[in-house]
Length: 631
Image (cartoon, rainbow, N blue to C red; front, side, top):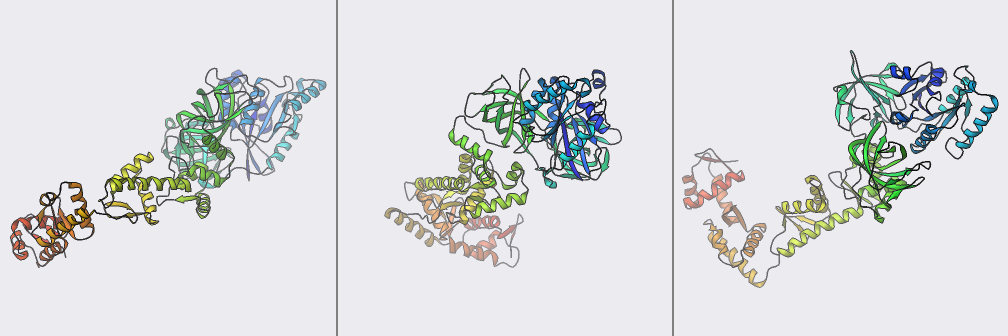
């Protein structure tokens, strides 16, 4: 059964609620104050029965200017609009405001219902129909059905219902894959015996009883205890249905209107949004750079500042790229539509489309930033992925899939295409970067290592931890896994070499002067001649005025396998160390320090240095008095 959501729109007291009651039999004004005042204050919901096999939900929105924010909480998720104009009044202020809002939200289809026809003469109605035709000319409602109706007499209701049924046979633009499930909350309440209930229009995907969900942006975990659609209990709710979900694990106080109920990673929580922003052609207001405005997206409302990226002011009828810096986090998805209203006075002035749900902070009036915005707004999927993968912020494939509203396999396919074309690189930690970004990462790494080589020509390479620290500082990240992944990628390509505790540029070798070569040979001879009689480091460092050269020679000899580092104070010839180890392993059972000294044929002084080193290396085990070799 196909699911369709219709939203009403139009000026206050033009008969929207009365018309919905005539079509559905449901009075959507449920509040006492609404009954008393005769106007819709909150969102109302109905279901139009039909024999055509459609689930037709109706969202009845307030028309009064004071309740526009309530209207905005429900109108964004509709498939098409039932635009109401009263025959006795015609085009009025909220007619215009609602119409501008619908344009900004990307609503592209609808029906115009001219209500209260029983209250006017035929000639007046004909004139009014001409006015309506002229007003909507050139818009998405041009050429759409215009149906004169009277809820009081029933005139035109069957014609209107037939047009609604016909309009339901339209292509479904909603994504139905389960993983994309999200429901913007427009009501939250507690039902006795059931607990917390949220309602909303199921924008994308599907949800089942027993599913685990997340309440965004606070990321509270909950479980679906029960589901109702159009007043009927069901095990599953689908995209395009008005849905009530009974949740366990959260209280009413944990959830607010504007929150999103969704699956893990189905939306992006953000404090900044890049957008294509348009100002209504009918407004006399101007949005200045750094203006504070109310942002309405889905059922959410949040204050933000508008940073205009290529100008100082945005006037009526103009469109520009902007970065919206939110005062509170919001859960959104790229492509979502939004409305903005002035901070004070609170009037609706424009709206737009999110082109980047998780951008980096931009500087103004930068051609390269604006060019990137063009790609994000109008580019192909591969171009958008390439642009995101080239940003300063690092992003992993799964995170980018969430940002772009893609399933994991869609993201993987797009990435594989980019990799095959040489445009993308996926690092071992799943971070995705453009080829140009990867070139910069490689260049940064090579630059730091080469600088170290130049400053320390006798060092085998830059210490690994120093390299990690310097790369994190240069890339503005604390992510160890990311930096390790870059190094792993460069190692696999043979660009750098892992030399144990240090990293070197591939092919790098220490080059000594003739004087240093002679010193190295002298030091090597000292250790060869000493055998198991170890030489303290102080004696070696006393051979040359520059201790850094001596340290480099020792490290080089160790790397070459000539000497072995017993502890911070002693090195020993490698074959002598192997002799010392063999002596320890020659015991069948436990042995004492004295027994080991005698078997090795050395002094207690050296034996006392060897054995703790063997303990540390896992060659022997010490119980406090005796040792045994690990076989």
